[in-house]
Amino acid sequence: MISQAWISITHFDLVKTLLANIKKTFVLAKARRAQYLSFLSRNGVQNPINVPLPVATRWNSWFKMAFYINDHYQLLQNFYLEEQKNDSNEIIEKLAEIFNDTTKNGCIQIYLFFYQNSCTKIHK
Image (cartoon, rainbow, N blue to C red; front, side, top):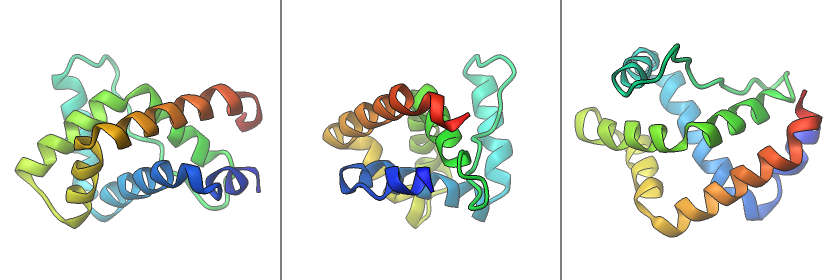
């Protein structure tokens, strides 16, 4: 599978971990999806949509999530830092740790940008 080839590269472990943890927060706490949409609306996003979550049987769904995260990175960072204050758990703490680390943030943003520029044609 093409997406598996990309995410198995160890340099991209930070991105893989970030996306997996974001997915867990939405799957394990369904109310968080509504909270995220509300957060987007409060922050001026017109027609907010939830993070597209990857599905194992849809190879391009992982790319859709990665592209979404790339496009909404700052909003997601702010959302999870707010969630850490309001409704924290182990996964939220892991995400907050990533978002608070400038080196990890820089690497993740570079890798997500790389994904989006390198994989846009193959994910469709």
